Image 1 (cartoon, rainbow, N blue to C red):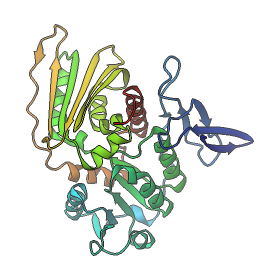
Image 2: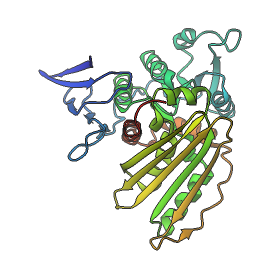
Image 3: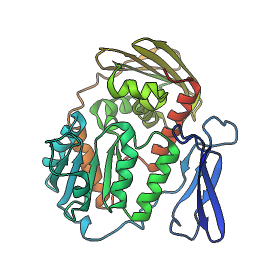
Length: 353
């Protein structure tokens, strides 16, 4: 039985249905929220399995005109970080080093760690911003609770497992007049900037992104849930950032007892074909390579990727820029489109492992 949501706008009802919400495949519907609380938004959702004549979940128009301009737009901004894992620790270090930030709380679900409870943090008027650094599956509910409490939110990628849920959270942020920012730190590395510079000046005909990584913990849990495309969302964002919007052409998966290999074939709007390959095995070290090919099929020398040092600090600076009214590094529409593309990949490669 599908979950059905309705939005009434001046006597008209826009319907957004999500069958079997655990996997959340958006139906092909158009929601036009005109002359209403969402008057700056125009939303269109399409089932990712549909092809000709349909588009993926899309936020067609960006708007920040309705965002709050009250006292919390003046630094220093009070922060709480939820989570004490590796990303959370890096996020805390970046926040503590920024002059416009006051890190007031670190909250963990582990007993004896952190400062107080999650609810206490949301009720604290001295906290204006929340960093959600928990497991992927936990992101939507934490983001929603934070927005409902009137906080600006920075969440580690992915925002949500589905495009439909991301649209809902962006709608909520707009309603509350809050900023919702996804921490796509991979796009902020010196390596990504170097590759982008090469792509802009060379005649690049094809790009291949390859990742080798581990298989265990939350990664294995996501794979067991069939979210292979969502596990590749960082690579999808990286490629989209280099060449623009992408269309899925083919996706395959080979399964092993302790891992899998995922191959994704994509086409950009210029007709060029690109590939993402992810190989995950238990105990494997993380390694990423980028291969560039010219129109003659000859390899183009790729820049050696520098370290990713400083990416969390750059992301905090971007978030503070949003609070000052600056434009986002990645548009909301892109976040939604890439999530829809990841969903389509998951549908193509079949059942969970």
